[in-house]
Amino acid sequence: MSQTILDYSSLESSSRWKNLPPPPGFSKSSSSVHKVASKKAISSADSHDALKEKRAWDVALAPVKSLPMQAFMLYMSGGGVQIFSIGIVFMLLLSPFKNIAGMNEAFAQYAPSKSTNPKAITTLPLHKLAYILCNMLTLAVGLWKCRSMGLLPTGTGDWLAFETRDPSPETSLF
Image 1 (tube, one colour):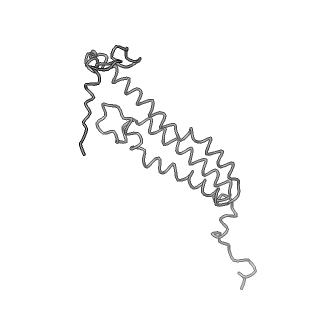
Image 2 (cartoon, one colour; image 1 turned 45 degrees about the horizontal axis):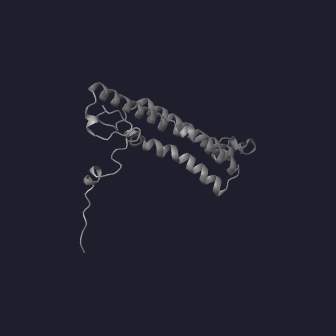
Image 3 (cartoon, rainbow, N blue to C red; image 1 turned 90 degrees about the horizontal axis):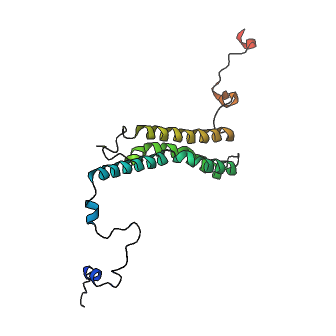
């Protein structure tokens, strides 16, 4: 069994499509990238960091953007205590804690290029604060649903087992 080696460098010089212009946005020579002035290179890095910051804001606001769908799912699950509604509420209550625990890893790829430690808590602090607040809003919606289902002890009747009473006056005389 013989092994065939393909040499792709020879295809470019003998191609019949050689005289066609390159498609828009494509530069044929990679040397043109190196001819860019240093000022353009700096602005390119700045625009890359600006794009990273924009994507970081998208990640920070993602819990709020998914909240209408989660609220619709809570509405459709009903007010009773069934396995389906408990599962949805459990996932709604668990996801903010999981998101906050993995927050530094979620934002590490969006750290500025000047950052020495992209997984540090001080990297993108405003974005991370907004992310925490958005997740707390999701948690509040989950707790509201638990309250409306009667799963949270909010009334006085929920605490009757812990209430102590004084002895009745009739039996205290003897």
